[in-house]
Amino acid sequence: MPLYQQFSDCKGGCKIAIWQIVESEEELVAPLSNGRVLLEEARQRFKAAGRRIEWLAVRRLMHQLGIASPIAYLPSGKPYLKDDERHITISHTRGYAAVAISETNPIGLDIEQRTDKVCRVQHKFLSPEEKSLLPSEKKNVEALLIIWT
Image 1 (tube, rainbow, N blue to C red):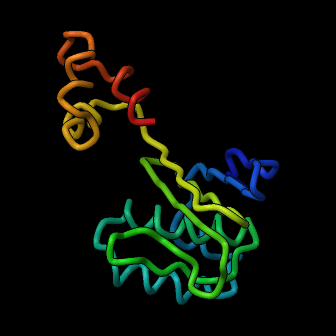
Image 2: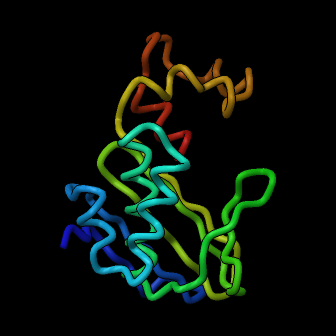
């Protein structure tokens, strides 16, 4: 089982799990009671195989964490649990998926590969003042990732 890391002693009753995705779509859903349904839904929703795998890995992680409620999404894209009062956040990046759940407080989690993609989207999270504080190197990936996180 490629559970990469799991933390369950966070403040506020939260659990975090990270999955290293090495399985096929079929292998990801095999232990899930609704696996065939999830696989069909993923195939209808996503054309890209990589996106399907990430979506299925999140559902596998939810199973790992004992979360039975399906995920729904607000118009903003924020996930929530349909039949559960707990707070959830999900993230995925090439080869990894992560889920965090909190009993009491809203929670946020993001995982990212170290690539120059962060350079292309820095305008979305940096103010002009913050940009002026960065070293003059055009592609300062490490500094941008530190600010992002």
